[in-house]
Image 1 (cartoon, helix red, strand yellow):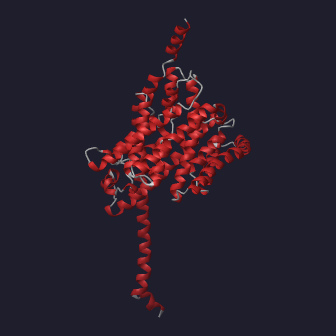
Image 2 (cartoon, helix red, strand yellow):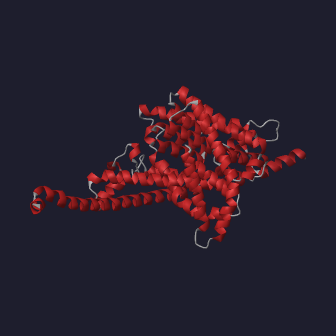
Image 3 (spheres, one colour):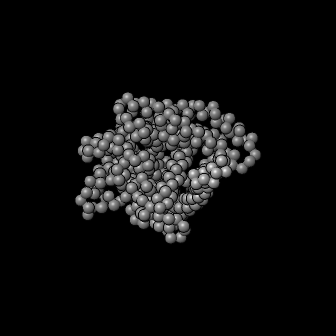
Amino acid sequence: MIFDQLISRSVITDIIPFSLLATAEEETAQADGSLILASVLLSLVAIYIASKIGGELCSRINLPPVLGELVGGVVIGVSVLGLLVFPETGATAEDSLIMTFLEKTTDLEPGTAEAVFEAQGEVITILSELGVVILLFEIGLESDLKELLRVGPQAAAVAVTGVIAPFVGGTAGLYYGFGVPAIPAVFAGAALTATSIGITAKVLAELGRLNSKEGQIIIGAAVIDDVLGIIVLAVVASLIKTGNIEVSNIIYLVVSAGAFLVGTILVGRFISPFLVGMVNEMKTRGELLLTSLVFAFALAYIATAINLEAILGAFAAGLVLAETEKRKELEEQVVPVADILVPVFFVCVGARTDLGVLNPTVPSNREGLILAAFLIVVAIIGKIIAGFTIFGRPDINKLAIGVGMIPRGEVGLVFAGVGSASGALSPATEAAIIVMVILTTFVAPPFLRVVLPEAAETEAETSKQEG
């Protein structure tokens, strides 16, 4: 009886095909895994080549390399070559040149190409998100809490006004003037609050005005602006998660972000000596870097657990570790990690941006162009207004201070990247933000050179007046 059952069709088809199917599934999974790895590796090749070429070209014309990474991403992305495209933008495997190349050079079949394409997009997106976490950790590490307290009320007034004016103007204009939905309008308005300290500092140094009154106020305000901007980003990104834009929710998120940042810094002062002591006792390679990354990732997780953004936790970790004796050593050790992951973020921001939505020859695209023009105007005027909040100091060039706050740079791109990844921004709004970031970064340096003369010229004019 048992023998009859064993040789019966039903039992055999239950046993043999199962084992064969399991083997086939394992082989398919293994093949898919190797193809996913291949697609990710090819994507990274494209990303690093684009970032390096773009960065080198920009550095040779005295522009921040990060802009080159962004433009490199645009070139290899959906706007031009289609090497790096993502499923969430509506692209398919057929739109990806990397997938096409894999189909012709490997055993990738059209039937499995879509699954490989989606997995590749997920991996690159995760690497991109890790990149922005490392970037914010690095920014926190380079910030000086003591300097924030020393900059005084003038720099603080410039920073606060430079955040509020463009944010309110941009959000209200988009919502009431253009009919943009509330959350995208708030996110675009938040992107206007950023200031890139690196670009302005470089121009001030070239003019010999870094230590002037104007230079010190600009740098101090930009540092405060960075902190306020990151809090704004964390709050706005959290609004997207909750989908609730009520006043009570906004107040809760603002208070949570502020309390988290202040609480982390206070608690960190007790924890950091323990971390430094532990690092000093370690004998293996990477003791400082890995311990610091554990601390940063743990705080990033805690931030996400309380409905804030991981980047706020990473930034807070950087601020805490910046107060330790290991700061300089850690800054040097983080650079290679940032060099690997941060370009992935900026190139992906460019790759996701469809500049085709700004093509003026297509009537339906003109709204995007008008949005971009509006954001650029608000971005410039909002920061110039901030410069004129300094009262009772006729000896200070207020216009120069406002102009020095104009460039958005990498911080503005972080806003665009987070907004794009969350799905909060339409293609037109996202492209408008990218154009605003690029143009404000291009316009500010020559404008600053016009309104703020070089130190030698200023000294000559002063001696003439005294004579």
